[in-house]
Length: 319
Ligand code: NCD
Image (cartoon, rainbow, N blue to C red; front, side, top):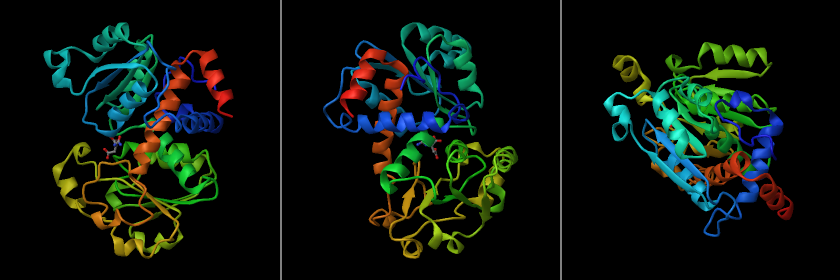
């Protein structure tokens, strides 16, 4: 319960299975307080959200989580709205903002930005997306959703569909799932396969995985269908993007071939990779996933920022 106290969350690779389970336990307790009631656990604490890239869910759920816990929020939502537009460096921004808050939630287009910020800041830094590299808190909420909706994670057949090359949520999710006993299937156009270094890591850990170009082949076996959009903004060459644009789509007729109790997840935003008629299917869980994200972020912020005695009391009284 205290092993994240005062800590940064830069990479999912810093988590072991036990720590992930601790976060899930905290998230579960927070489900009671995530709708309307709230808590005073982080009263007097300030969280800064420094978002150098667009965001809806990640920023708003972190902010909502902080308010629900009795804390406050400051921040900016684009580089243009901050002194970065005047030429200020990330280091100077971090060394300033740390004086105004108790933790920093950072989203930045540069891989390694969160790591740099964590090294510089005296307050905990949470990575809310570092370029195409990682998005660790998204992976935590993705797996928390699986656990809450299917009751377990071990033993499941999980298909990850879409832009595996540039999708940072995919990278963190794959690393996190490698701590569980799951079978992974990757479905993508050939040009959007996982980065070599992630594949090598999986092989080294003895994780079984297979690639498919066509989801039809494996959809009847899957317990979890995790879909990501093509990350248009990360393509160095627009021609490369045009080649893969629109190359996969989850439709309602495709879902009729899936298990009736499988779940469809998506970190969102959706562009065209899940058709709108899938939303009314019972398997569609991508909106409830955003709610689990709020609960998970409440749990995570409490573990990082709450007074240890208060946290202990809350945990024991919730047992
Ligand atoms: C994702 C992201 O920003 O990486 N969104 C999110 O945080 N929920 C996924 C995406 O942008 O496709």
